[in-house]
Length: 214
Image (tube, rainbow, N blue to C red; front, side, top):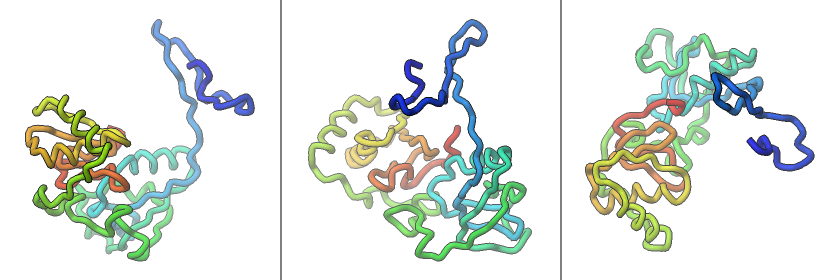
Protein backbone atom coordinates (compact mmCIF):
# COMPACT_ATOMS: atom_id res chain seq x y z
CA UNK A 1 0.00 0.00 0.00
CA UNK A 2 2.82 2.41 0.83
CA UNK A 3 5.60 1.37 -1.53
CA UNK A 4 3.83 -1.22 -3.67
CA UNK A 5 6.24 -4.00 -2.81
CA UNK A 6 9.08 -2.16 -4.55
CA UNK A 7 12.37 -2.82 -2.77
CA UNK A 8 14.37 0.18 -4.00
CA UNK A 9 14.44 3.06 -6.49
CA UNK A 10 15.47 0.76 -9.33
CA UNK A 11 12.17 -1.12 -9.18
CA UNK A 12 9.98 1.30 -11.08
CA UNK A 13 7.16 -0.92 -12.32
CA UNK A 14 4.01 -0.79 -10.20
CA UNK A 15 2.80 -4.31 -9.44
CA UNK A 16 -0.05 -3.22 -7.16
CA UNK A 17 -2.37 -0.24 -7.08
CA UNK A 18 -4.86 1.16 -4.60
CA UNK A 19 -8.40 1.22 -6.01
CA UNK A 20 -11.86 1.96 -4.63
CA UNK A 21 -14.77 -0.41 -5.15
CA UNK A 22 -18.23 -0.03 -3.62
CA UNK A 23 -16.90 2.66 -1.31
CA UNK A 24 -14.07 0.49 0.02
CA UNK A 25 -10.35 0.62 -0.67
CA UNK A 26 -8.73 -2.47 -2.15
CA UNK A 27 -5.25 -3.42 -3.31
CA UNK A 28 -5.32 -4.62 -6.92
CA UNK A 29 -2.49 -6.95 -7.85
CA UNK A 30 -1.89 -7.07 -11.59
CA UNK A 31 -1.88 -10.47 -13.25
CA UNK A 32 1.09 -11.68 -15.26
CA UNK A 33 1.41 -14.31 -17.99
CA UNK A 34 2.32 -17.88 -17.08
CA UNK A 35 4.42 -19.31 -19.90
CA UNK A 36 5.19 -22.78 -18.57
CA UNK A 37 3.68 -24.86 -15.76
CA UNK A 38 5.76 -27.74 -14.37
CA UNK A 39 3.56 -30.13 -12.41
CA UNK A 40 4.43 -33.33 -10.59
CA UNK A 41 1.94 -36.18 -10.42
CA UNK A 42 2.10 -39.91 -9.76
CA UNK A 43 0.43 -41.53 -12.77
CA UNK A 44 -1.04 -40.25 -16.00
CA UNK A 45 -2.65 -42.01 -18.93
CA UNK A 46 -1.70 -41.62 -22.58
CA UNK A 47 -3.90 -38.52 -22.88
CA UNK A 48 -2.26 -36.81 -19.90
CA UNK A 49 -5.02 -37.30 -17.32
CA UNK A 50 -3.02 -37.32 -14.08
CA UNK A 51 -3.55 -38.65 -10.57
CA UNK A 52 -1.61 -37.89 -7.40
CA UNK A 53 -1.98 -41.15 -5.51
CA UNK A 54 1.46 -41.04 -3.91
CA UNK A 55 1.78 -37.28 -3.44
CA UNK A 56 1.82 -35.88 0.09
CA UNK A 57 0.17 -32.66 -1.14
CA UNK A 58 -1.76 -31.72 -4.27
CA UNK A 59 -0.91 -28.02 -3.74
CA UNK A 60 -2.34 -25.63 -6.35
CA UNK A 61 -1.45 -27.84 -9.32
CA UNK A 62 -4.82 -27.56 -11.09
CA UNK A 63 -4.93 -23.78 -10.67
CA UNK A 64 -1.38 -23.49 -12.05
CA UNK A 65 -2.26 -25.63 -15.07
CA UNK A 66 -5.37 -23.56 -15.78
CA UNK A 67 -3.45 -20.29 -15.39
CA UNK A 68 -0.83 -21.44 -17.88
CA UNK A 69 -3.39 -22.53 -20.46
CA UNK A 70 -5.39 -19.30 -20.04
CA UNK A 71 -2.16 -17.36 -20.66
CA UNK A 72 -1.36 -19.28 -23.82
CA UNK A 73 1.38 -21.21 -22.05
CA UNK A 74 2.14 -24.91 -21.86
CA UNK A 75 1.77 -27.53 -19.12
CA UNK A 76 4.40 -30.24 -18.58
CA UNK A 77 3.83 -33.24 -16.30
CA UNK A 78 6.46 -35.17 -14.39
CA UNK A 79 5.08 -38.61 -13.49
CA UNK A 80 6.23 -41.93 -12.11
CA UNK A 81 4.51 -43.97 -14.80
CA UNK A 82 2.26 -43.63 -17.87
CA UNK A 83 -0.67 -46.05 -17.93
CA UNK A 84 -3.16 -47.08 -20.59
CA UNK A 85 -6.14 -44.85 -21.34
CA UNK A 86 -9.25 -45.83 -19.41
CA UNK A 87 -7.41 -47.45 -16.50
CA UNK A 88 -7.41 -44.48 -14.10
CA UNK A 89 -10.29 -43.86 -11.71
CA UNK A 90 -11.86 -40.64 -12.98
CA UNK A 91 -12.55 -39.56 -9.39
CA UNK A 92 -8.81 -39.53 -8.69
CA UNK A 93 -7.80 -37.42 -11.70
CA UNK A 94 -6.46 -34.09 -10.43
CA UNK A 95 -5.15 -32.70 -13.74
CA UNK A 96 -7.32 -33.38 -16.81
CA UNK A 97 -5.42 -34.20 -19.97
CA UNK A 98 -7.05 -31.27 -21.79
CA UNK A 99 -4.57 -29.02 -19.96
CA UNK A 100 -1.45 -31.12 -20.58
CA UNK A 101 1.01 -30.48 -23.42
CA UNK A 102 3.87 -32.79 -22.50
CA UNK A 103 4.71 -35.74 -20.24
CA UNK A 104 8.07 -36.61 -18.69
CA UNK A 105 8.50 -40.02 -17.05
CA UNK A 106 10.89 -39.46 -14.17
CA UNK A 107 13.69 -41.74 -13.05
CA UNK A 108 12.98 -43.17 -9.57
CA UNK A 109 15.95 -41.33 -8.08
CA UNK A 110 14.47 -38.05 -9.33
CA UNK A 111 10.96 -38.68 -8.06
CA UNK A 112 11.25 -38.44 -4.29
CA UNK A 113 8.00 -37.75 -2.46
CA UNK A 114 9.70 -35.28 -0.09
CA UNK A 115 13.23 -34.11 0.60
CA UNK A 116 13.37 -36.66 3.42
CA UNK A 117 11.76 -39.77 1.98
CA UNK A 118 11.55 -41.43 -1.41
CA UNK A 119 8.07 -42.62 -0.48
CA UNK A 120 6.24 -42.64 2.83
CA UNK A 121 2.71 -44.05 2.43
CA UNK A 122 1.61 -42.48 5.72
CA UNK A 123 1.98 -39.00 4.18
CA UNK A 124 -0.53 -39.57 1.38
CA UNK A 125 -3.18 -41.47 3.32
CA UNK A 126 -2.36 -44.91 1.97
CA UNK A 127 -1.67 -46.29 5.46
CA UNK A 128 -1.86 -45.11 9.06
CA UNK A 129 1.12 -45.51 11.37
CA UNK A 130 1.26 -45.41 15.19
CA UNK A 131 1.79 -41.77 16.16
CA UNK A 132 4.30 -42.80 18.82
CA UNK A 133 6.58 -43.87 15.96
CA UNK A 134 7.13 -40.19 15.12
CA UNK A 135 10.44 -39.15 16.75
CA UNK A 136 10.06 -36.33 19.31
CA UNK A 137 11.96 -33.07 18.91
CA UNK A 138 15.28 -32.72 20.64
CA UNK A 139 15.12 -30.69 23.83
CA UNK A 140 16.47 -27.30 22.81
CA UNK A 141 15.34 -23.68 22.79
CA UNK A 142 13.07 -24.34 19.81
CA UNK A 143 11.21 -27.12 21.62
CA UNK A 144 10.89 -25.00 24.77
CA UNK A 145 9.24 -22.22 22.76
CA UNK A 146 6.89 -24.69 21.05
CA UNK A 147 5.94 -26.24 24.39
CA UNK A 148 5.12 -22.82 25.81
CA UNK A 149 3.02 -21.96 22.76
CA UNK A 150 1.19 -25.30 22.98
CA UNK A 151 0.12 -24.44 26.52
CA UNK A 152 -2.02 -21.64 25.07
CA UNK A 153 -3.97 -23.92 22.74
CA UNK A 154 -7.55 -24.97 23.38
CA UNK A 155 -7.48 -28.81 23.43
CA UNK A 156 -10.48 -28.87 21.05
CA UNK A 157 -9.26 -26.11 18.72
CA UNK A 158 -8.61 -26.22 14.99
CA UNK A 159 -5.10 -24.85 14.43
CA UNK A 160 -3.37 -23.79 11.22
CA UNK A 161 0.42 -23.99 11.50
CA UNK A 162 2.72 -21.71 9.54
CA UNK A 163 6.30 -22.09 8.37
CA UNK A 164 9.07 -21.64 10.92
CA UNK A 165 8.82 -21.99 14.69
CA UNK A 166 5.09 -22.96 14.67
CA UNK A 167 5.77 -26.18 12.76
CA UNK A 168 7.30 -27.71 15.90
CA UNK A 169 4.03 -27.35 17.79
CA UNK A 170 2.60 -30.38 15.97
CA UNK A 171 5.42 -32.59 17.20
CA UNK A 172 5.06 -31.29 20.76
CA UNK A 173 1.28 -31.76 20.71
CA UNK A 174 1.74 -35.33 19.49
CA UNK A 175 4.32 -36.08 22.19
CA UNK A 176 2.16 -34.54 24.92
CA UNK A 177 -0.93 -36.40 23.73
CA UNK A 178 -3.56 -33.83 22.76
CA UNK A 179 -5.97 -36.03 20.78
CA UNK A 180 -8.74 -33.42 20.49
CA UNK A 181 -6.52 -30.89 18.74
CA UNK A 182 -7.11 -30.61 14.97
CA UNK A 183 -3.98 -29.42 13.17
CA UNK A 184 -3.86 -28.17 9.58
CA UNK A 185 -1.23 -26.74 7.22
CA UNK A 186 -1.75 -24.23 4.43
CA UNK A 187 -0.60 -26.71 1.77
CA UNK A 188 -3.89 -28.56 2.29
CA UNK A 189 -3.24 -31.21 4.91
CA UNK A 190 -6.05 -31.63 7.46
CA UNK A 191 -5.58 -33.62 10.67
CA UNK A 192 -2.90 -36.10 11.56
CA UNK A 193 0.50 -34.84 12.67
CA UNK A 194 1.99 -32.10 10.48
CA UNK A 195 5.67 -32.70 9.83
CA UNK A 196 8.48 -30.20 10.36
CA UNK A 197 11.74 -29.21 8.70
CA UNK A 198 12.15 -30.09 5.03
CA UNK A 199 9.00 -32.26 5.27
CA UNK A 200 6.85 -29.31 6.38
CA UNK A 201 3.67 -29.06 4.35
CA UNK A 202 2.97 -32.77 4.74
CA UNK A 203 1.08 -34.62 7.47
CA UNK A 204 1.51 -38.10 8.87
CA UNK A 205 -1.90 -39.85 8.97
CA UNK A 206 -3.86 -36.96 7.40
CA UNK A 207 -7.65 -37.00 7.60
CA UNK A 208 -7.91 -35.15 4.29
CA UNK A 209 -5.65 -33.53 1.71
CA UNK A 210 -7.21 -30.48 0.08
CA UNK A 211 -5.89 -28.40 -2.79
CA UNK A 212 -3.86 -25.49 -1.44
CA UNK A 213 -6.01 -22.58 -2.79
CA UNK A 214 -8.92 -23.62 -0.56
